[in-house]
Length: 255
Image (tube, rainbow, N blue to C red; front, side, top):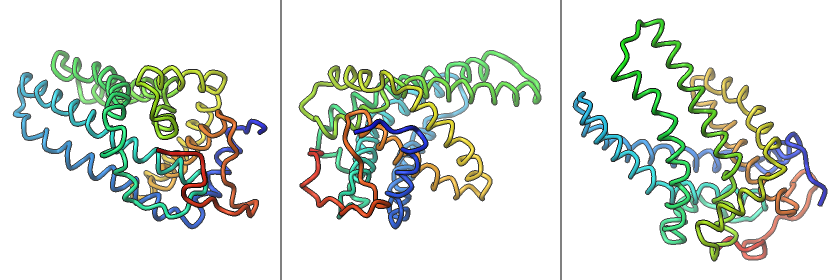
């Protein structure tokens, strides 16, 4: 298979989402709502003191680790979509609850660690530095940019972990990390180009009363699944070529 450019991967993802945007967006919304609902319980522990802040922070870390099963289910869903598998359901989001749960949580720890590192400047400025409103606004923008850079860098090495787990659950946690890094070698710029192409769409989505953000997020998730298939040399499903969709069970194993 000829390697595709970032633009070709995104175009392919758009084709795969035709007629499936509603379900794909529903999967994303359900994952976000569950993350928000579970995470909101940690706010009950915060009373405004430094001690309660760190206690809430620890609870959020634990919750984020456990919600790795949803991240696994979401990535597996979009991988199935990229392969043209029929019969997908929003219930596929919960696949990780009963399958490879321990590995999904361990892999999520990589992203959780990145999130922890990204909020360190925010914690320091919030509790130990007094800023004017203008300085706080500038600092807030820089902190968000710093957090985005941290997440992107981590994804450039380990962004394919959940796809690998879906295809090769027999691999250990360490082996999955090594394999993700191997597959991303030579494809990091392609991943970065996908991210850069999505940012303007996400900004426009935010301006569209916020709800428009779900369309580019679905496109981003599908594009990453296509990137994974591109790295392993598998031709993704492309409805624009009028290929027959694959039936569940005839594609590359996902369990």
